[in-house]
Image 1 (cartoon, one colour):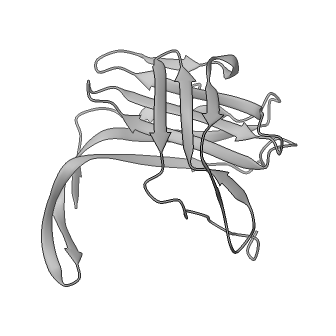
Image 2 (cartoon, helix red, strand yellow):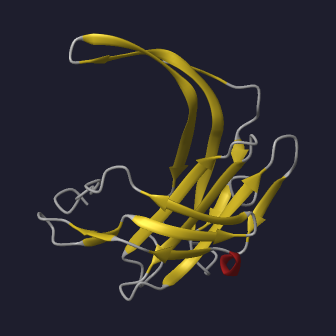
Length: 167
């Protein structure tokens, strides 16, 4: 695949310092490269298929753990049809509520608008249960942000990353 853009990376949070909880140390370093022009060839069952479209790249790292009480992390990065890039996330408690939330909107040619925790809401819809871990995951949400309300559904329910054996 060949990826191209004329836009600078989107530094999430405060110049790339993204808060993940209410305490000062609950942060990560995080940038995105949305609206990547994507072209190339994918091989499927021995057949080459030409592909093109828009892609999204994220890179996030931290030496801190998520805030106390967080048992899940819901995240979405969306390339919108008008060229905007929308990010929203929340760290989820066991009861389904949010420990912390945030996100951003970058409209084409405009400065980034960061969202405060109270401006982002995830309302889960359908839930999937893992046969392996027995964990239950939301696979459909309504996401409310200052940029609007969006309904999002997973194309594939089983996306579990079970890292109990490694971390």
